[in-house]
Image: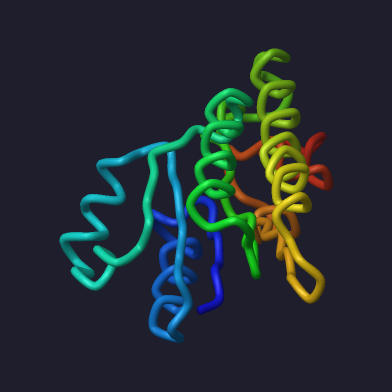
Length: 158
């Protein structure tokens, strides 16, 4: 049985990806920051009880280390990794007035989560494996109050 990891699997694209891989017969591992969201998904989709879920905040290197250590101990490898998790957006608002610390935190954390996961995943991947890094559509279209996703709109005033 092929093993797939989907980070950020408790809602949205991540949840739909978890469901699709599970229905296709894969052994699915997933995680999210909010265990309550996972429990809500589980209540709606009881078939998710077969998914190996762990609550993890992937921006925390210690939690990520434990999570990937668990995967190594329990499964030994990954055939597919889908990096979907994203941080809580801390830089909401008009770009010119968002606190600099919030901009920095969003930029670093959004990049860091995928980078950290890649670092661990590469060490779990045999030949023929695949890693997919997902991003939000917010990177290519304007989204109100999502300053860090809008480089083309940073200087605009509404």
